[in-house]
Amino acid sequence: MAIAYLVNIDLNNNQLLDFKVYNRTSDETGLSGEGQLIYRTDLDVLKYHTGANTWITVGTSTDSWILNGDSGTAQTINNDNTVLITGNTYITTTVSATDTLTIDHDLTTRPPDTTTAVSPAHGSTFTVLDSVTTNTTGHVTAANLKTVTLPNDNDTSLPIKNSAGTLQFTAEDVNGVRFGASGGASVTFNSATQLVTYNAINDNETYTLPVSAGTAVSGHTVADIDLTAGGTGSGIKSKVTFAGKNNNILITDTLGNNGVVKIALTDNVDIAGTLDVTGITTLDANLIVAGAGLSTFAGQVQVPTATADANAPNLGQVKLLIAGVGVFQGSYNASTGQSSAGPISGASNIALDQGDYFVVSVAGNDGGYFPDLEPGDFIFANADITASSSPAVSAYTVVQADANIAGVGTTDGNTIKGVSGFNSVSFTASASGWIQLIDRGVAGTVGTASAVSTITTDAQGIVTAASETTIAITASQVTDFCAAVQTCVADNSDSVLIGDGTATSYTITHNYNTRQIAVQTVRTSTPWDTVFMDVERTTVNTITLTTTTALPSNGVEVFLQIIK
Image (cartoon, rainbow, N blue to C red; front, side, top):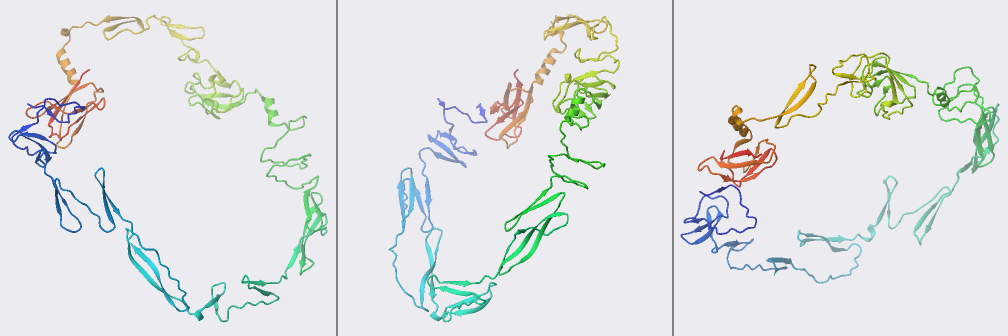
């Protein structure tokens, strides 16, 4: 029986020794694809399959093909015939190496251009080349000629329009266009440059703005700016008077054309009403507030360091006076880690000064940051704490306000000490109240894959001794040993049917979490033989099987077995 391969065989560039082509006494039929070989023992010839049940004898093929064109009679080209491809008008063919035929379009030449001189008179006609039409290959397919007629000599005229484009009149070449001027203006002509110039007269007034001593205003200093006419006019047409109150605004001036009017505050300014300042005001002298009312500042007021008891101190002096004096900051929720002003631990902590303190309102430990706290306990800042600085717990001092019930913790330092009692048989206590189990000296691991653990405990359930006992069990002492082994083997093996008449690739998911799996494929019909196909252990949980042709429905059963 032949071995059935469902995939290609790759010899990896090795020789196939001592083989024999499939011997037949007639041509095979019903084969798919092409390229199969048979040896006809009745004819002693080697044949290959070209598809559709067509077999060609090796070395005796006689192929032919048809040569055809846009016109003419089609020609049959047999073996050993030569096809000659010739050029025609403006076409040249050239044969070169590597079985190449080049077809070139020859250059097109024409005689040199001819020129004709002519001086057409008024009213005469002549012919010009108006347009040339070409196809996509650049060949000229049409040319259009146009007849041009020149105007007669007396047909020349010039339309004259206003700025809106409306025709005013038409100037004929006999009369031409004439220019005139009025109101003292004149027109000049330059025949060399053909320039027409309109010359107007200037009768406008001119004005200056001199500074004068000013028109008197009672209780004010003044200065005037006069609008003075010149050119064809004269006299002061209008004036502007600048007046400043003597006690507050001072007006000074420099008289004449290009003069200067200066406006400034006096050295001492008296403000009887309200002074609103939105920007920065700097006083070189004293600011005296004579009114008995309230003075209000919406922004910051910079105050120098006070040197006398009656002077106002600045914020820096106040901080120095109260430095180190704690300020009550509100309640602290030890469960959430939030104070009334914000968190005091972590990267978002609030800023505190030395001595600032909180009173615990809700029990907790801020996620283990503090020891367990109860309502009434105090938390003090040991030093200044910068905002968003993630302070260590050592930056605070906790003062417990009452006697607590003893708690539990992982270390002596973070365990609340309090009222409690312990059995001396099992526990020890340090001077600071740290309670621990008595060390029995049995620390370690007992028991292995080949030994079981033997544990001894006291009345409180505490281990007082531990040892190992070697496991020694014979097969006869295990109930249903063979059945258990078969179950174990079954748990590590499986079988799957594949084939649907279409697919050539199948993925089987086994979920064994290993690639160490034995795979066998068996045909599910006569002769129930082992077949071969490509097997890839794609992942630790899947395998992929591939064939070159589609398998029939459930045509192959795949057996899987974990090796180790």
